Length: 489
Image 1: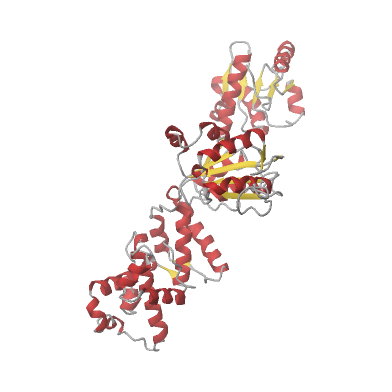
Image 2: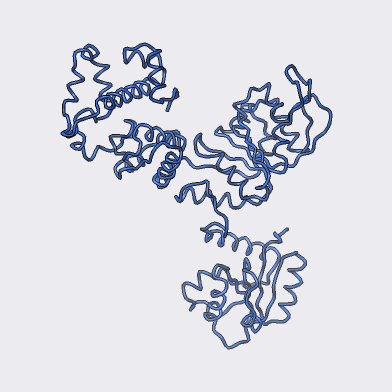
């Protein structure tokens, strides 16, 4: 039976014969250990925290409670085991009983020692609630239990040069996890090279990964290095690995096994030293069952799995994410955005099927529509309103033109014959005392109606133009005028 040699055992015992015998056992099993008498223990501080401390007989005039308290002062999280029975065990405090894992009534054997070390390892693991000292992931925003667990899982592999497979729903930040692992690894000074396996045509993927020689195929007018060579010494991030064709999976498996490859059309073998981090939102194990993904490649990539939590499981992070995304929008020149408490409550109840990517899209859109504004429930898209507007009178007092643009669009679509008779214009009769910039107001109203029509039609411009009863080319020109992107939310 093999015992991990990174575990250390502390033995404190005044029984000379037992100290000598256990020293022989520890040495034979290749277990790092430190053996002391009780006089030595009280005089010498612990050099490092052991995984378990074994307590034998004590010749000093000290109670078991005080003895365990002395261990607890120096090694609060270290489990203790008594090598023989003490009459005072039943009188121990609850704190001491918690630290005491076992009282042996038989000699310490290899099997017993292994079992003790395993029990101590499990007990210590339950108390590790913080990241190792110095390890922080600045790209990962959030302090929810789900994010804290993700960071702890990442911290265990950040300095390990092993392949990592990141799974999780789309939009959960898998590339940020990969980049964070790279930035804090010993490869941080070398390149981080991302490749989206689903965005490159299958016939070009091999050349993209491994490069090609001049004349290897039509259009190869010069030699070109691939992503593996670009990432030499650093990290290669294979995003959407589940979209890689089977033929390419075979070639990737060989590179992972041999750490070398040839360029397309070349014969020279190129050695490469890269760390592979792969990511996918697909169920690779189900794809193995259907024959769409190679099982041997899966186990090569899945040396250390990391799963990114969806945003609905970390709702406590939404406020922090909103502030960070709003700051990013401000840095990009879109204006400063603030959120009313009611809007925050509503957004925390949203299911977020698109996860953080959907949240970032929403913040950017709101920053465009309400630059330097405060976002309340009524300013949110209708699908994000999960609570009632707490101050409806605040909007009504300013005239119906400030109400949700979706409502105005419904009126325009349901009663198109009234758009020429002025019925819509009757909703903007409340003129402020200080007057109004009519041109700016009409442009704002027009922009809101265009955005609402595009959202309703899934950003199909032709259908949106039909809803607004204008020509498609006219709508395209107005979208360009107002800086509205032709893409879906």
